[in-house]
Image (cartoon, rainbow, N blue to C red):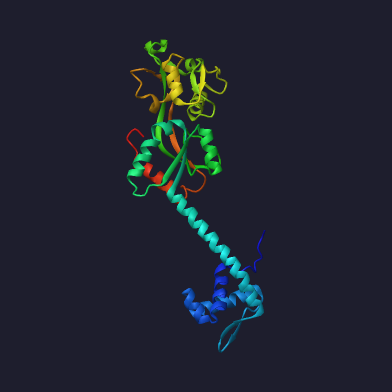
Length: 310
């Protein structure tokens, strides 16, 4: 629906309603906190815009014409709805400050997000109520696009069209094996070709970790590289780590997720000529930063309180 250019603005309708209700321009001006001249100018401008006379000026005051009384009645209904609309928007703004909905890929959800949230709450007297969903990166993108969360966190450089992002930390993927795996005794790095031809324990498709690793292999070996089916595909980083420890095969995982196990239950195997450093990103729907409220404050807090390893 396209409104006519003769449709008056709400302030003008509110002015007419005040004049009709009080019976004079001066009384309406006092009620609205305006000068009498400003009220008179608004009425004249609206009469010119509508093409009808709204008031008759008399020595006793301003009397609405028949058209003016009818327009004032319509304005009353419209302004009531506008008031409800304004109150609803205020509630939404309050909700943005009082509630924070997040989604994060598993690496961020398991190893970074908890300490960010604890630190955020400790620095805010009235911290918002937080809910978050842990999912793979593709699902995080879907939740942000749908408006189900205000802010998402993913791994890697890829961000779909229509979403904005900012790097908030950095991570590196590492190759790990069980202590009894043959690679644990190698005295040399594993090269990219050997790694690409080895069945690995991996996350499911849609995982940011898996996608970033496969893109790194393609950059090094080319798009025609040999593709070997995974030894296992699992839905969480913890299950991949457990499968490697149990001897299911090698895996390429976030250093954040295996650092405590390397040297104990896992062995780190160096990789030759493969760049596996990656950014961790915050993503949202529009604007140079998230909309005003808890999401923007949380993102700013992360930027100001990174640990050295970030």
